[in-house]
Image (tube, rainbow, N blue to C red; front, side):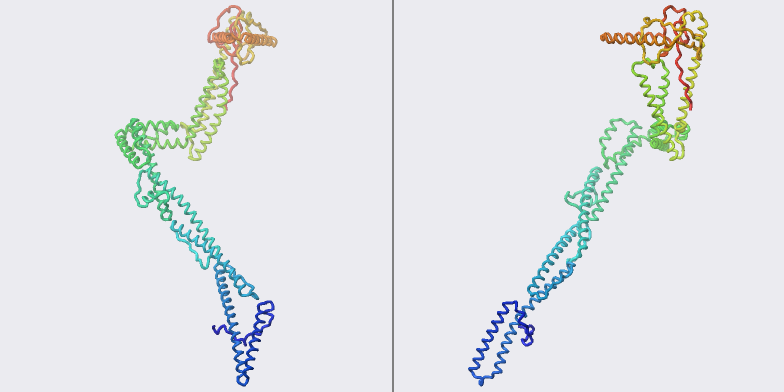
Length: 635
């Protein structure tokens, strides 16, 4: 055994037996040792005494005996001391390991109360804490390794540089959390890129099929040949894929626009050249879609038609002039505006003249499209105004009351419609005209007039027409009044004998069906026949009792007519039809018959016949003029 661990018994402390007071095994050891030592010493002394002290060097033998016993005890203590040193060494190693673990885990080293604690208990306590720290460190290392593996795979797919963290010492929790967020970002980017990759690939395949344009580069071929499970989402590859997709989209857009423009041009040339419909349909069926082949075919067709157009340039220009004239009419142009385009009358038929006409047409097309709402409202306003004037023109006709289909009600509905709609359109047109002036700095004109001038002219013309009608009616009434007075002066005795004073019927729009020769003749008072009205006709005066009796008689007649209808249902239609037919026939034979005229029945032959077309009183028959409308106030 090494001398390093051997201690001399003489140098050891003299300890009290109190240290083993609570240890039965130690007390037993001490007792047994003392007993054995006492017995051995006594036996040794007995033998020495038998030998004789003279024969032996007692001091030397005693010293040897004590030395050997001392050596034996020292060796025993040294053995136990070696075990203690080993325990301390193991505890020290555990403490060092725990210190490293705490450093890796970035936690504080725990403290232990090792006073009066046996080394074995202290060893188990430290060992337990070390195992706990090792388990926690292993968990963190495993998590870190998983993050590293996932990161490496994602970075490889995405073509990016990974962020690797050292495992010893373990990174800080915030660094691990940052790495986790970075890996999640990579995962999201990878998912989004995969979706975008498949979407772009699908769109590329559709565009390639539509254009019928095979890929030329190796990368483009590889992309189209990949299966649905293979992806290439690296930064450089995605950039190439997006560039390829954008290039195809732009190419397809340009091809579509060019094809649409060429189709319009071909249709326009076909129309101008009057190409056969069957030939057009055959060409359309052969060249469908938006492929490059269709584009080339349209270009060839345009080139062919352009050559044909050059051979018939005069015909084309004449058609352009007709189209230009139509646009001038749609845009409400005046002759001065038309004359500004001097090339309209040029006879130098060439490509330049054709191009000038084409530009002029496009100019007026754009103008019409820009003010489409204004022109649409002007057209509606013109139609409504014409219907309004037509309705007012027909409102004075006598036959408008001779209807059984609700014509008057329909006219009133139309009149209300015009009364509401026309002012709204006028207001909208005025606002649009103001907006046009603000936008263009000039007034919008319709056939040379501004909107305000155009609307004002229509109202002014209507007012003039209304005044002319009032003047004509007034002149006609004055002429009829003069002729009537002259005729009464020619036959004074007959007029005084017959005294045909008339009163208008009650103000009812309903027609009264009467039989001409069954209604009794009503004699009216003639006390006021000498009074003359403002119109020149004798002023009619009928007493209130006479008017009441006349109304009672008419009511009695209608009631009897209704009762006869209810009692005889089978002959109802025939009777009503016959009565109305007789009434219509009688009215149609009279001249200047109005709803305000009250016809008296003649009981004897007239001394003379009325003159057709003259509006004056005759014996037996009296006519009342239509009540004139109030004068319209001209604004």
